[in-house]
Amino acid sequence: MEQAQRSLLEYLRAALDPEAAAPALPGKEELSALLELAGEQQALLLVLDQLLPILRTVDWAAEMLGPLRQTLLQGVAGQARRTQKLEELCRALDQAGLRVLVLKGLACRRLYPKPDLRPSSDEDLLARDADFAAVDEQLRRAGMEVVAGEMLGQAQVVTYLDRISGLRVELHRRLFPEGDMLYGGMNACFAHAFQKAERLPWPDAPVWSMGPGEHLLYLICHSFKHFVHSGFGVRQVCDLCLSAAAYGADIDWPALFCTLEELHADCFAVNLFAIGSRYLGFAGRWNPAMEAALATRETPDCDALLEDLLAGGVYGSNSTARLHSSRITLNAAARPGHGLGGPLLRTLFPAAAELEGEYPYLKGHHWLVPGAWVQRMARYAAGNQDLSAAARESVSIGERRVALLRKYRVIP
Image (cartoon, rainbow, N blue to C red; front, top):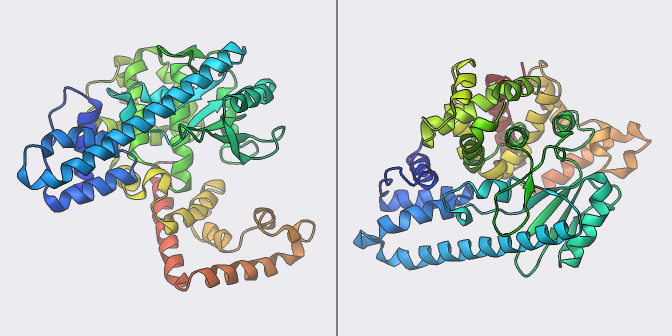
C-alpha cells in the first residue's frame, strides 16, 4: 500500500470517530499525494477537517492554510445548500401526500460526526410506479429541471437539477435496471421497501428511507454492482460500516447473509466489513449479533479489495482504461466459468443486441454485425492514436479485476 493510501485511511478513521487519535502530519510531498487521492475518493472535506488543525502547527504549511480552508468552507456550504433544498423537496412531497424514499446520500450522511463533510454529488429518490408522475410534477413545481431521462412513462430513472442550490436528484422507479441479467433480480429483494419504510430522525423535514436491514443490503448491492463494473471508492465502505455500526441491533444478520449468498455477494460483504475493522476504526464497534454472524463466515482477506477500491477512484472512474475494462468484467460475470478468453472475445466483438443502440441499422439486420465491428474499431482508432497501448491497459486491468471477482466468489 502506498503512503498516501495509508494516510488517507488514517485521516478517514479520525473523521469517522471523534475519539480516535489524531493522524500524523504527512511530509510536503506526501501531503500533495494525500490531497489528490482524497479528491479522487470524494473524501477531501473529511480529510481537510482533520488536517487543517495539524497544519496550523507547522511553519512550512502557512501558505497552504488559506486555500485549503477556503476549499473546506466552500465545500461544506455547498453541501448545506443542497441538503436544505432536499429538505424543501421532502416537505413538499409530504404535504402532497407522496412518499418517496431517500437512498444513500442524506440517509448515510446523517451518520457522520459532521454530516456536511460527506458530500453527495446527487441524491437518489425511489418512488412507487403509481406516484411517479405526481412526484415528477412536485419536483418541477419546486424548481427542479429535468436534465436526463427517458419519456416519463417509460423511464426507470429521471435526473433533475436545481440550478440555484446545485442539487441533483435521481428519481428512480427501480433500484436496478429491470431485465438486466446481472442486477435485475436484485429488485426482488426490495419488493416491500415502502411497506417497511421508516422515517429518519431528521429534525428539519419528513425524510423517509428503507428500514435499516434493507438499506444496508441496498448499500452492499449498490457497491457490488459497481465492483463488477469498474470499481467503487472507500467512501462507500465508510457509508455501509457506519450504517452497520449504527443499526446493528436492528438487523437480522443471518437473513441478510442468506440473501447475500443468493446474490453471490456474501464473501464481498464480509471483506468490506473487514476493511472497516482493520483500517477504518470499526473493530469493537459491531453489535454482538453482527460479530456472531461474521464469525460463521470464512476468514476475510480484504487487502486486494482495498487496493482495488483505492486505485480506482469513486466508481472506478479515475481512468478511461479502467472504465473500458468494465466490459471484460461484466462479460465474465454474465457468463461465469468460461475463462477470460470468452469475455475478452465478447469485449472485442460484442453481440448484435449490445450494438443496436450504437448502430441502429443493425435492428433486423444482424448479418451486418461484422461491418459494425469494423466501423467501431475504426472509430476508436481515429479517436485514439495510441489505441494499442490503451487497449492493452484496459485488458490488463480487466484481467486483474476478473481475478478479483473470482477471489471474492462473485464468479466461480
